[in-house]
Image (cartoon, rainbow, N blue to C red; front, side, top):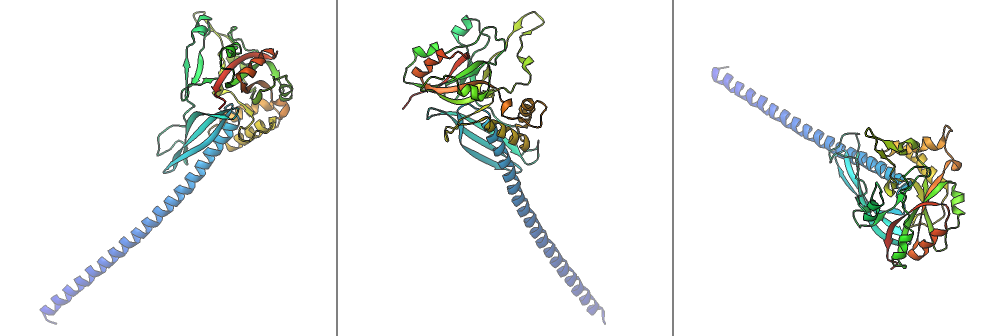
Length: 338
């Protein structure tokens, strides 16, 4: 073979090798794209399922917490904003007074598939908005605390007093205040008892006609020493403040399904809350351990009622003056009947 023929064969071989390389590269690119699309699709499907699970878990946990908190509050809906491996639930709540709803709060709860790692804003949840405002009369009488108001609608928030705790004599009684109000208004009032009672004893109390027992405040306070008077290094003594309605725990009648309730409603929510081990697990577990007092599990006899919430017309609420078991009474939300 002459020199020209050898050069031609070399050029042909080079062309064949380049063509083979292009085919190999194209095949590699196509395979890489297919693998990438498959992996991306798998990640998207996995993210959807994992976020679905996390969202459902967070929602269930919040619903359980709602069962033991929030006198006269019910949820009206929610919004679920999702991202990669995380999301944010926003819950909308109203307070219902004798069938009349009041916008109350929007609460945001962040959830993550992987704990402590989120692609949304960092944070756990937002609390119900509130504001404390000074009361001239209370300041004049030497109260060390102020009234709480809902920041969305300006309504008063109820306060509760634990039996046996020293409040330096500064315990509110809003029943006389009712005489100055429109008698046809509807309102809620928190009644703090003078001692602990069972639920059956509370239901047998001579509650004035026209009033509805809507919610029962349960003793969940494992560390009552926290509420004892405190003396600082300068000899100044401070006393306990009442507990706002956002921080009391108990159970009540659902405004949507107004059927009678028993202690089991509270106990069932506690058991499920401990089992879920969600955002509110610590509080569920603390209450559960306090109530069972070394037993395998708590029962109805372990539920002690510290107070209750009643609703009715302003006129009928004034009849509470005749109830001898009252230690404190604070007015909550007030609405028009129609």
